[in-house]
Image 1 (cartoon, rainbow, N blue to C red):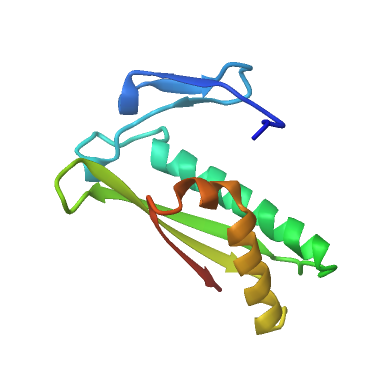
Image 2 (image 1 turned 90 degrees about the horizontal axis):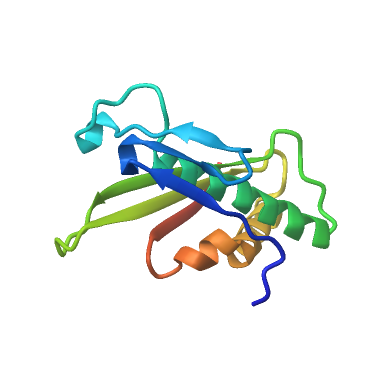
Length: 140
């Protein structure tokens, strides 16, 4: 694959540090959630960043396949990503789960379901984690 776009980000301090893109467009303070043994507080964490990126990428895929099918997306169309983290059953570390909910109000069920299935096949985030992360995709 020949990349069409490449970006670079760095982090220091792990889950309790700072992270950002080298161009300065994104700069965040990282905090460990209380659920993972941290103090919580103001800041973000890798799972929130992944959820944001996955939701945006998947929704772009929905828009792309809708355009190819000449389907106008309704007002209020959106994709929500819920990312979970927990210990793997085999004890080898931590794993992720992903639940995507796609809202396409007013579209016929078969049209919406077809767009979502095609978007899941086209989305690079979905392709990157396929076989490694349990992903569920539902329509709201």
